[in-house]
Image 1 (cartoon, rainbow, N blue to C red):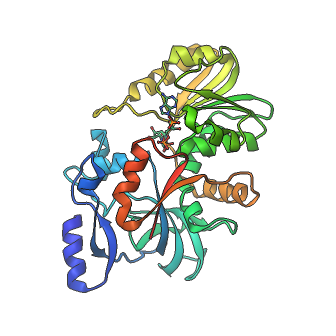
Image 2: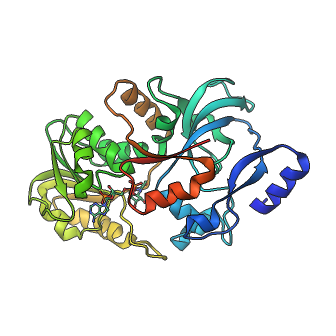
Image 3: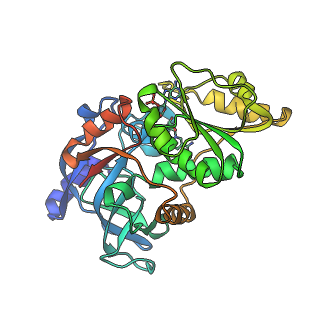
Length: 340
Ligand SMILES: NC(=O)c1ccc[n+]([C@@H]2O[C@H](COP(=O)([O-])OP(=O)(O)OC[C@H]3O[C@@H](n4cnc5c(N)ncnc54)[C@H](OP(=O)(O)O)[C@@H]3O)[C@@H](O)[C@H]2O)c1
């Protein structure tokens, strides 16, 4: 059922909820993310219905909203978005559980990633494996900031860069959603971390634990210094990044926005993977697997105090469009959250 039909069906049945309702793709949040009424979802077998207390925004939110780059539409709806809205991470309270759910019960406080997009709403469903209990020391706003961005950072630093104690690690894009977690996770693994961001945000990057900082508008990256580079932003050339790595260093490309409508600059990622077998350094990229096991590993790091979400903007549900705008304009330091 497309979104418009879902809204009509919900109005007929009376089981509606307040939600951000997106019926068409568009690059300007204020034109496509409006408030409305939508059908309250019901949990299927293995799923959990969550009363959403907070959801978060990341670069992926914008891509889902805009339907860009175009190949994303093969998955998220060819002509219009197939989901209610582009929200994916959530934190909230279990309202009801589907058949076979044993991990959580109504009333439990949880966080994780929704199975059908649409967490900018009063209710959303998630598979039980994609949820964990909310860390006791985190607010709903802080918990909602974690699942997508911190999960990506964990995969980049631990699994792909395989960071070891005492290694020199450079995080490019250290002040953003993924970067603020990557700095802290690399420190938790015992690395010496250099964080690169814009000048005004460097104090925040230091406060996260970075041992050194670089201003991406002014500073050169030192050559042959780093055992691992986590490249989240800036789209520097492979040659440039390789010069900064030690002879057997690892480059992990997480992202980097180009605005390209067809591939959004993925060519650089593919070139890195193709070149890697022929050089001493390891070069590559990955797409986050969003595993439940990673969420549980993050819960442990969060409860131990090794990682703390840096939440910058907090917006009410009715201002979700402004929240996306705030992130995409580059004003946020860390994560942007929507409260429901
Ligand atoms: N591979 C995956 O599975 C995966 C998963 C999640 C996200 N991603 C991608 O990762 C990227 C970052 O996502 P995000 O949510 O962290 O975005 P974000 O919160 O908007 O953060 C972007 C960061 O990039 C920095 N930056 C901008 N221009 C830069 C430059 N020229 N040099 C160095 N740093 C620069 C910004 O710093 P200042 O604001 O201080 O300039 C900020 O720290 C996106 O491209 C996203 O699509 C990939």
